[in-house]
Image 1: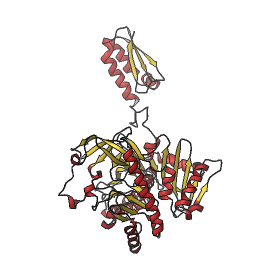
Image 2 (image 1 turned 120 degrees about the vertical axis):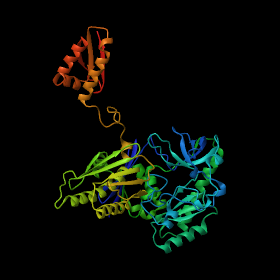
Image 3 (image 1 turned 90 degrees about the vertical axis):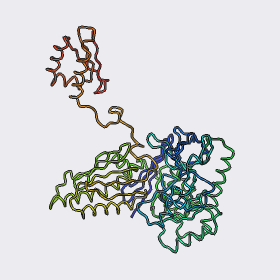
Image 4 (image 1 turned 90 degrees about the horizontal axis):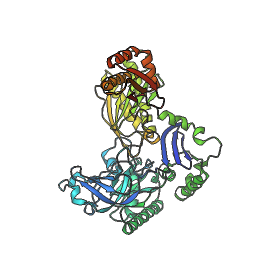
Length: 526
């Protein structure tokens, strides 16, 4: 498989695309005026403690207050506990400081590779209440785990986590984990023993996938760097007053190099001379063997045009996606969830209806997973497959979906297909989707995606005239409206207009206004 990482740098934004066999599978966008906050460490101040939600709002100096859940609160007396982690600690930590896993895991790996902290059930007799550990006005150190999404502020944790090239340092827990993608048990044990030998007491490390085959010297160098970084953060915390930024994660370019630029990437191509130099310096320091895989793009044609990425970005913003067979899927993003609908479209099949439906659903599975990755869709996702009568067909589609999701680095959970052909799933989300990043609600339809029909608007105008006509002072009624509505009244509703004039006892004059919204109108008299 040919994998390429293409990076486009301009004065206003940095964009990157991960290409697998000529097809863009993931997009990353960071605008200079709106950089992400994930991975940043702040000294914040608790604004409100909400016992009913077992959460708190923390001021970290951003536009919206950050949300801190009770399971993300750090306590010294619980430092040495067995904890559950949510996410993935290997090279898949691409556009966020906290990695994401891809699908179901066995119990052992889940304990080693999941990233958000929760107090374990074995200590449930000592239930933790947020009002007992946090007070309003208290100054605390927090790290952003999720960027602001929609109207919600960022999500933060008091369990800082600092990713390096080979390791992830977790200073608030005592734990050693190994990426589940390192499957050989001997290698896992070897790496664990190395970390156990060299790590400071009462600290945690997770060994990333790129550490496979590495020796103590390389791991120790990464560990020392991360420990010094944490010491600097603590020094800044003591000197700064809330609210203050104590540590800012790397920019998008270097995050991509740190987190996904592995030997599996055959080429990294970037169109900026300055960033190319910066990347080479970073690579020579941390991964010298990959230096020959970094290339500078210097042709006149824009790099995203040359690799046909712009076209695929445009396609990622479409609501309807056609399948090769003639079927199609429709993707709708709402505030609460993502709805994906599968339709047979032009595909009529060759044998029977059930066979046609099964083929369409199986083809849709691959496209749905591809679109989810490309668009960075997260949260609750509802997939409405075409209804299948046979239970074995539903099982085949479900297994195909599970298999396709293995290629996705983001953690997802899937429920079995219901009798109605619905699949409910969740996918971990830490940043905005491509649609929300590149688009904004339509100013014309106010984000509804539709406007009232001309017939509906016309009848609303007539009803409004009936309400107001007798209270209007003057011999004539003046109606200002959009030209399309005026055209409809003249062509199809002229009888209704004449009847309204007779009912009101006043002549109605229509004036067209090209600057009006199609639903806008004004009624006056003279």
